[in-house]
Length: 96
Image (tube, rainbow, N blue to C red):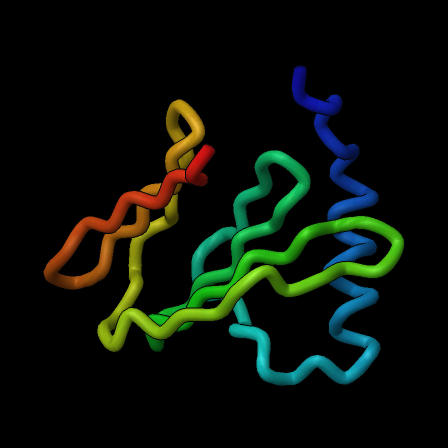
């Protein structure tokens, strides 16, 4: 069973907390951030992405550079994150 979704104000304060702590290597979102399963996914036009695990002390789970522009809002369907770049569609799903 999954934990209940985190309220939006808690997610927003997690992003503020990370920003105020000088984590400047996070991508500044150019698409609306999306949240699922306790994570906020940040993506920008430069092709950089990083999910944050939210909570009292947010943690960056990973970083990647798609090396091409991301201009579309990512989507989450059936536990899969979809990211469209200029020429490709990526699907990410957690291994169990």
